[in-house]
Amino acid sequence: MRVEDLKILAYRPAWELQERLHAEVVAGGEERLLIVEHPPVITLGRRPKPDAHLLASAEDLARLGVELVHTDRGGDITFHGLGQIVVYPIIRLNEHGLSVGGYVRALENGVITALADLAIPGRRISGAVGVWTGLADRPAKICAIGVRIRRGVSMHGLALNVETDMNYFNLIVPCGLAGSAVTSVRKILGDQTPPVDTVKHILVVALQRQLTAVESAT
Image (cartoon, rainbow, N blue to C red; front, side):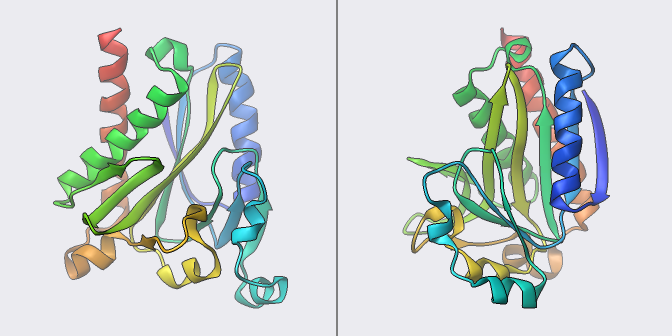
């Protein structure tokens, strides 16, 4: 699959690009792995009433320069911003031997592997999609996942907090999970945090290896 770093791109143009590439991949074109950072945006998934977990008013969002977008991905509400690595795989699941659930687990496994390379222990939590870290009694979410599969090809993907301004998460109930903490690589590693581009490379390699391992096993 071709890896493309879009650098910094607003959410809606990135979504439009995904749609175009999705049509190409459905038609047999080259699979893609898009990497991007979005300017501040809150996105709402397809769960019922995800805006119930929006804590800020329209005036607050306008004052802070935060866009609000209703999407067609799975999941609830989340925030994207600079310093957060967003990855959009556009792949044919059947060719990788993946069910929808298996695909989500492959994304989680890739993130967990990448975090291990950064000496951060990542894990799943039963009943909650994404990747978490921290103590068992005080877990914090470091990576959100929300996908859509249409005609057997994936869209949307994952968002890993690296140097994200975590204050923005006060505007929402992240992923609709009341009382859950969120964290970032910077909050955990402090001054030892690698540059975002370094983390991008580690994450992409881990995701590619995970998908290749799944594909090779089929």
